[in-house]
Length: 327
Image 1: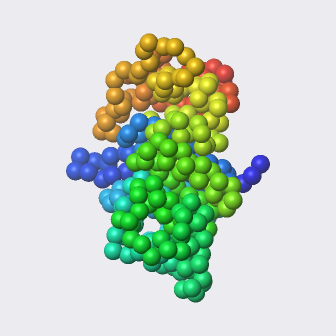
Image 2: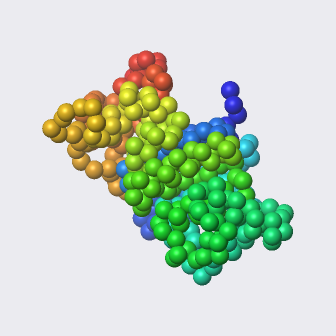
Image 3: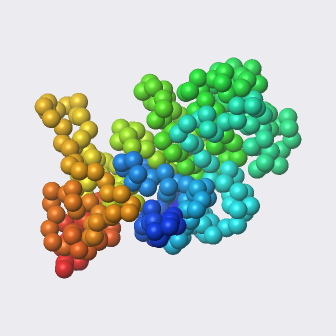
């Protein structure tokens, strides 16, 4: 069994407010192995991006990690001082964000930003950093990299800017990349290219990836395992094929049923009635119980943890008997 590269254990993130602490992530646990791509999927507001931000130490104030641990390569990182975490971020953990324009400084050339990042984390000269930057741009599919390295972000298309951001994330050869919806703002054809690029670069560089998205098509095409999040918790986690084709949690089944299938002739797609609860009004018991078609009494009073459910693990009392957790 390969030792996990990233271990998130019982992570709890809170935002202090005038009315008390708002719990945004509650008891989130998962692992990522070296070279693995873990997808994190769910509706907007489920806590996907917040989980990624907590891992890379970029929670917006006053948000804070209020419980649990984040371990990277055996070392606890959630309690590191800012400067220490800054050394980990970029050097050992890279980040790719949804909008490349927010990741690139419009006042500096692509080359200046790449070489500065490389020299901040690696002991190389200016000329060596420039050569490495050109090589990274070529690896990420940017043609005529030697000429384009001296251009500014506004001179690149959206897809090309995202390639530059991926090159930035890989600049210091990190072991883990947190990619937060890296294909959302791109055309479908460009999305496919970026996905293929991420997969190839992971294989070539041996990096692990946490891929945050709401697109199950991207998950199915890219990931080894997937974690489905709902209302700040992990609802189900397991191998991609198992989660997609044999969902153990009713929420996951609803998500899968809402995706059109090319090989089926259906007049109507399935839909999940209602909406995800606000973080200030999480219902008692299972957070999904008001929208679930399989709810019974225990769901309304007792909150389930992740339970073994065949090849996946699901936070659902439907699997309690098999796991020996009968009420």
